[in-house]
Length: 305
Ligand SMILES: Nc1ncnc2c1ncn2[C@@H]1O[C@H](COP(=O)(O)OP(=O)(O)OP(=O)(O)O)[C@@H](O)[C@H]1O
Image 1 (cartoon, helix red, strand yellow):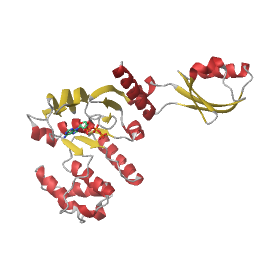
Image 2 (cartoon, rainbow, N blue to C red; image 1 turned 90 degrees about the vertical axis):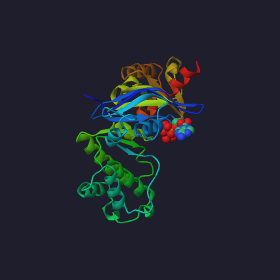
Image 3 (cartoon, helix red, strand yellow; image 1 turned 45 degrees about the horizontal axis):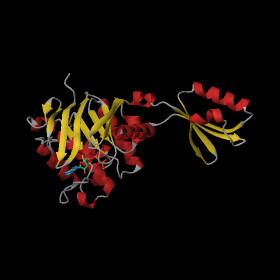
Image 4 (cartoon, rainbow, N blue to C red; image 1 turned 120 degrees about the vertical axis):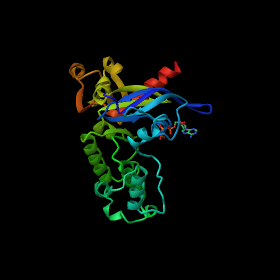
């Protein structure tokens, strides 16, 4: 089956800045995929290339099999992009803008879908208001509606929840999840890593224009599955033999990192032998945010070598 998105050896240069350095990515149909990376990693540049807003210096991109340059119109029709920046036309009402956008894609009788979008995005009572009069969060909802107006099979959301309140965030994800269940492919960039962790089944991490990690969310989390243990001890002294496990000492507690849960038994036995009493014991697994920081840190160290 033709993938939803294919990116082959894409480079992008802005003058002397090499913003994308040979990015290769395939997103299969029906995936809920996250594109993560620190500020300036190249996420928006990659999305702009897919949306035909910017041209790759080298390499090619395809959306549902359509080349984003050679077959621009079909590629664009297959894609709905929620941009990061709040761009809107100040002199249209929300409904007029969605009708206008439908016309752009050659859709005349689109009101039923427009009404459904307005309802799902909590915009029904704003339909006849000029977009310039909406709050920032409301404008972002309109951008989501605009991206979905032609029911594209592939939806790319570039930080859609920045500046959006908790309630809409939940409604929005519920709606996007539904679209994904209905077969739409979703690609998400976000700096809220807990959102990516709960929603996305596969993740690519970008750093300085290169993909430095690409795997399922499950594999990324389990590959960095070190167990973290926070201990408050009485007396407040860590036996020397446990020192190599010490990651940090904070607020009178020792934070140890173990490879897996089986290491915990040995730690407790050592403490018992040393007649040290455990006052507090907390065990936790790293979340995607910690895994992300670790992967970014490792890539930084390797680059410095
Ligand atoms: N039109 C442009 N002209 C020159 N440089 C650009 C242009 N667009 C992007 N860049 C540069 O390319 C690099 C990648 O930027 P990009 O916006 O793709 O990053 P990003 O991963 O989306 O970051 P963020 O998380 O901050 O949105 C940055 O160094 C940025 O300054």
